[in-house]
Image (tube, rainbow, N blue to C red; front, side):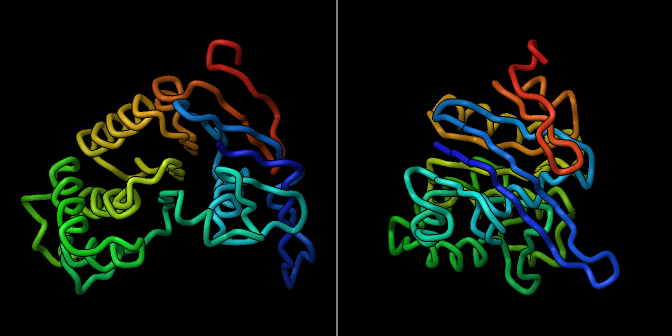
Length: 224
């Protein structure tokens, strides 16, 4: 599961001094559930997910992912998560298969196991028609499919998605949401950041509403 307690992130700005991006956030996400983090742009969603995924360290507070502290045990945490954000980039001069092979090595996959997983995610996300195309030559939707495949290649128990359907066409967005529904049925723990109300209504078992760096409300969609 995912558990955060009193997470705070303060950035230093040369003009404005200290800027609080996340202020005392606490949340829990459980296996077989989708926890939505709902808020407008700039509310603190991305900073929160970056702390939980070990990309940045909190100024204060703690976060535990599958029993491991995100600061003290960051390597163990990264083995157990699949993280996708709007800033996730692909290597433009590699094709989809090469990207997946490259990152599969980082995940510790090798040989036939790696080849099997690559073929599984290529089929699952409909990548086959452009699997050998350079990433620089792909559309936004095609790149996003490859990015998601990369994030879940090692079959992690915990998934973190930061606005994964942003800028996507309807069909690609549908593929993303169907995958998240399947992952929930398979018992994954899923953290899903969005500001699209219809996605939150469809996917999320519970929701945290974050605004101006603070959680303002929590509950099921019906309760909220």
